[in-house]
Length: 304
Image 1: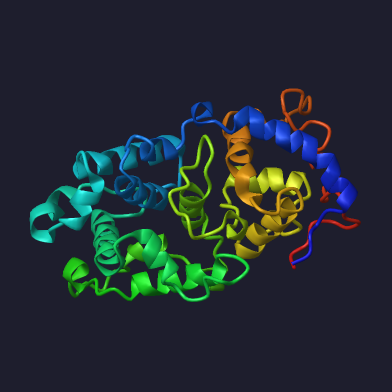
Image 2: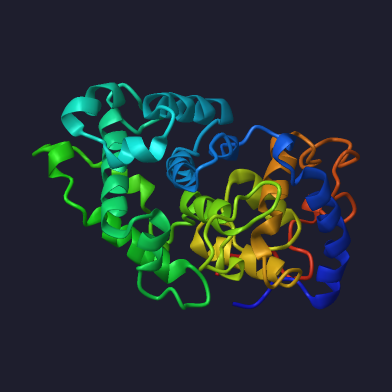
């Protein structure tokens, strides 16, 4: 995939983005689900909490944090032990009371069931993911396809019975091949693979260079204003194009700017759509939403 920006445009962005990273890329900068992961010290606990927290990371921040907190209260002091020992008859009733937006309690139970099966099968979510095909591909896309396919192939009849209602657990396991940006799975991978003051870097066998940007509304908006993508519609292609643009600044770790770009918007420091411009925005001068087209491109935003 070609980059949207010329070499000179990338050089112009490098300084502001590095300053943004230094300003916002620290765990105390904003409320974020990764805080829950860092409550725990055991890697096994951190991994399963990260997976469940990332799965619920959609919607308003306050709602996301409340839902994760409710789930962790049920998990108790060792989430990994709870999931390994999960018993539907014993633990199902309390989990049925936990929902998040359109996700019902039974869907949360299905997520726990699938996670338990992953641990039984491979010992860890990392190994289950690494057992996926095409792990040697240039990015994680093929592995995510196989990961989600395997997860959804797990027998869920003990959870859902013969119900004909839609199994919303499928929402937790999207596929790049279906066009999804896979934001929550990419967020989980970022936490697990990268290591800095925010991300934990628990996984050692998957290089950060293969990660894809987790797309949320803030990253999409800032990415378009910076000319990192020419796509209008969020999806896998947009996520890959933003990642490829950032790879021009950091080939080995292109998604390291994700946390700071996201929280630039969440902390109301982005100047987008303000009458008096972007006086408070760390990207002032290089982020030009009023131009209506990506920097370094001769045309308008187009769907490709």
